[in-house]
Length: 327
Image (cartoon, rainbow, N blue to C red):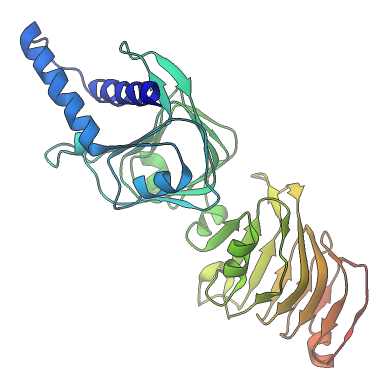
């Protein structure tokens, strides 16, 4: 660990030195400045090796530069928030950086790391991802986003506006889409989850209009879909809610379908849709407008609270058990 910390410190020092060229200085002065620079880096940077520390370091209470010491997997959204300046100096330009790598004293990259996250929302202006890989979708809500030539985003990059996209500098590889549009409308209103507790929260009245799982999820108790929501979280649009147990490409072709296993799902949200994927368990529908799309399956029974609720439902997909009114 001591060796890696030294390497990470070298990463940060080298990174800062590369931020801008300076005129040559006498050797004694250069050595002094290098020492001062290294001290500034240590006191203003976050060097992390686990998920909670990374989430905190990239928050509004974090630091201008964040470096990782290894591969890190985060099961929740990372929000890159707050205004920061180069080297933590308010007199310098607004700037922030994620450095998932280490390097030697000559700035040669030694190790590259991967940050795996379901969703990273960028709210900090002039945020740069350098070297290494971010595996997940990036939602850009601030100007000046940069992906360096030696960095990769294994996922999609969505911009909240055309202006934000125009201000971005994408030199590295993006394996998915880079676009402004419908997908980016979901930036701050969707929940992308990987575990049961997060799914229950997302489906609750305090959750979001659309929630998706990124893998198979098993819940041991009842899942209640509650609250009134609108399409894309816009009150001017119709009441609508959706569960999306799948992933798709930029052309909206389904790539992977997942299974939610739950003993009981109770639907109290009006116009709730289950699209693609599988719900393994019984579904109890108490609100009008329930929809099961043709490419989705309920491996269990569907019970409606009344004939009116049943009549208002659209069940195009497969239900392996009964579809009936049960009071």
